[in-house]
Image (tube, rainbow, N blue to C red):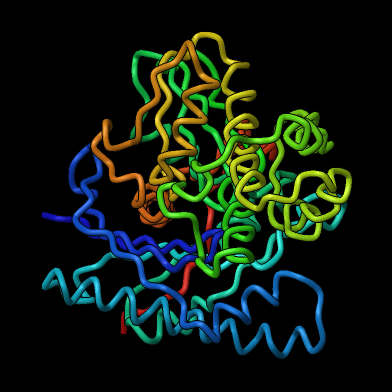
Length: 370
């Protein structure tokens, strides 16, 4: 019999919620469908505003919390309808929600995602597992990244490899030869977020499709070197980051140091090189790795992939299509797996990745079935 779970994920880029329908009845999870549902323009603008301090934040966050849950519910039910599956056939759904703050450092560090799981459960009548990050933070971890445990479960092999997720922020998972040593994973720094913001500012488009706009110019080595001086890159793992560090305000401060660089496309090309170099610098710390698999929206940026390959001379670079999983579906599939792990009392976090005191079963359970 099938064991159906849904995974719902919206990342730092806020390009919409990805909904994955996954069957866990076999040893290797089987992806049945994955679709993306964009945010309405008004809600998207509000979410961007909530990522920085502003007026009347608590009330605005409360309304957005319910609105995101409504969108997630509609998206989940659409995927089920498209696949002729009833809500009562789904065991549970794992919802990441939408991050609006990630500040895990310090004695009272936290990570905040909205998209009320109670509303989601009530609207879909499906059990919901959500709030995955706070248990790990309570145990002294970063609460991120969470996908390495999933990567370890489905992508581990007899050969050492690295899985790179390039969303708004990039993270890597080092998968050593099966059971030979601990899995390592952490955020490397920016993924698409700075490129997307810069592209929107200068072209009006939400992202640079295939990196075609950036590819028309050469990057600036001097600007690249300045960007790479950010102190985050010298921090040891475990570590995680977000828009709190890498945002338009920070980028503009760096550009003030280089007034001679004023071609927007040169800057876009440099941002692509910045993302690829900071990823590659971390991968090169694992000398036994010969294969790198890329997932997330960045896998579709052909120019970015070329930049990454230019840095990784000793590695073969693929997308996760080579492993049988659509690069766009990996993160949503991971949150379906985290729901499956919660239901089956499987540890969904890796202390070696997040820095927590121990591995843990993640998530809070909100019943939806009546």
